[in-house]
Length: 379
Image (tube, rainbow, N blue to C red; front, top):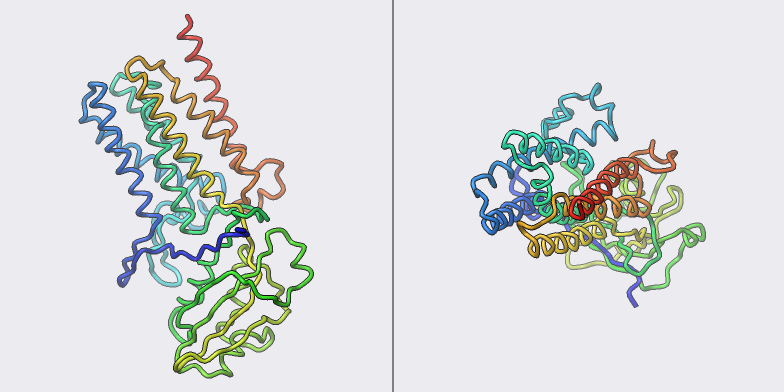
């Protein structure tokens, strides 16, 4: 029987020097590329000028990136506006040294508001029906959303709450990256791997009662020149000062592993060729794969909306697809938030988190537009 899913996939496809290609970036770009091709097909079928597709694509890309970034800063981290205003839009970090960071923190609600505004400006300038434009564009938004949420899964971000359901996911790739890429200096680790722990191990009784507590085994492959004494200090002694200890990295991954900072780590050594391998028993946290819930939902929504458009095309009631999209997407988003961890600490004291509060007005807009489309058709 499936008890949980172990996810140790790397968020990076490959890295060459300072250039790194990540799954998130690739899927983000793929969503817009597929959307552009699909919109071209839709405009061709409806006899509309295909040259408008490039303009709409640019509006969608710019509105999504800027709106999502500004939305995250305004709704979740407004302190960035005063503490690091350049960090709002610049994908670079200057302290302690210059490095490319990307835009860390994007809010889908901010992207939604920006897209609605950008398309309103476009429809007004082109003297087109605003709702008619939205009816086509939201089909593409659903497809792009499916790609972006899949990228979030590769990044182990937007995680769900602990669960004992058999499809709960234990995210281990953050710890893998931390152990393998400890920067310059005394990094004793060569590479690491994870498996589910099927052996009988010593488990803390306080951990056994916690939701989603799942035994996993970490295999640490040390470099050939590392002495066993250094490995023991690196792994097991929480009191002895050491530059990079396993305890430090476990403490930094508290959202993925249950760990008592004072209890010793259960481990054993084995010799393999010229180096040592440590077998470490850990307690992972199986969580709802909230990113996959949303990705699959967006994909199903895309198929439904595209089929609806394909059936009616030019006879499509104005606002019908847009209304369906807003009601279904933001209704699901409101529901999924109950299964997700809050993004910021201030949300822990709120009856509804920020994602739910921002979803409510968008859901209401969908209800109004959808009701209007049915009444207009009847009249």
